[in-house]
Length: 458
Image (cartoon, rainbow, N blue to C red; front, side):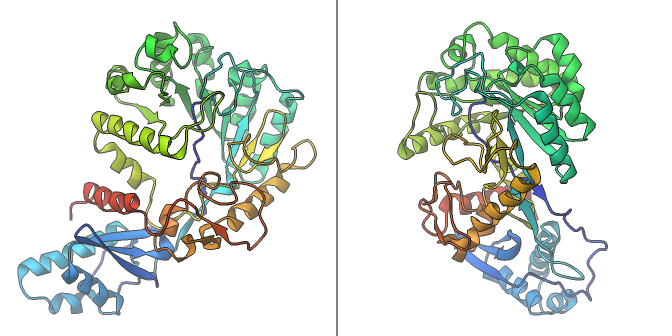
């Protein structure tokens, strides 16, 4: 079983609209209606609330230029009111930022693009696993009673594709322990489903990698140490070099590959050497592999970190990330916050199907109630119910989120760990309470400012 649960972003409703022409002096820019200003660390964040977009303004002069454009003045009118080349250059940089961020439109205001987290499909193919990791939040190992047959999973995939689904994640347990694994990959490929497989990597062989690589869009392999000794403290001994070789072979086959790493208290003293693993794989793959460090440990087989312990753990892992690449967090933040991409939710409502066919609205299936079984109802029923759950638990129905200017950028946080209903049942229109964040999130503001400065040089 992979080391942690990661909420995905789901699918966008449509592509972000691109400008079809360049800006001219006679243009009037069209802005979203609700723009709020937040003073933070000596700069001004201009937040377009309903489109989850933002600009960073260096001072009140730049804010005044933005306000003039919002009032309906043409670009030329504002420019003609500015004295001096230096200030004109400041205004031109503002225009560049507006267009680069698609903060305003030339012909109409930008439309928000909603993240449809309820269209996610996560499949726990089997609970069987060849390992017994202490931090496994699925407590995988033994096959469940009444696990779905191969033909059942193929029916689920067909129904998902027929409903407009495009991407699935297959995990376990260890998915290679499921007898029909290859057949299911082939069925997904035939339906043009983009398939991601999460695996501990141990059961793969070179022949199997070469045979199945073309059937997947991405593979994620868990390596929980920096060498065989540290990896064995979490997983098992004698497999570290084999896993590294598998990562390299998958990558050379043209597959997108990620390495997922979870340090625990048993081996976190070796985490500052993680760069050695990264450099080894980067050298062999020309930096084509992605690395994911778990920052939050969920309740596992024998691990159960408190909120405070997870804060300490998170800080430790972030220091390790900075040692590897101090700018990686900015890249990840900006890539995860596409201009005008609205997140009303963490992804709650996206379907996870356990190996016995039970359906859940989050991949932390041992902590929330089942919504039924795919052997009793068609998948379309659960997709519709998932959409309803996603919308009903959105930030617009949460306190204090619904009054926050950053609500669509933040998405509100985890519905299990950070909300009063903890992923359990709710009533339509019920007001939910976000229990962790009290108002504006300082870390979020910090990342918005710093990652913006990293990405753009206007």
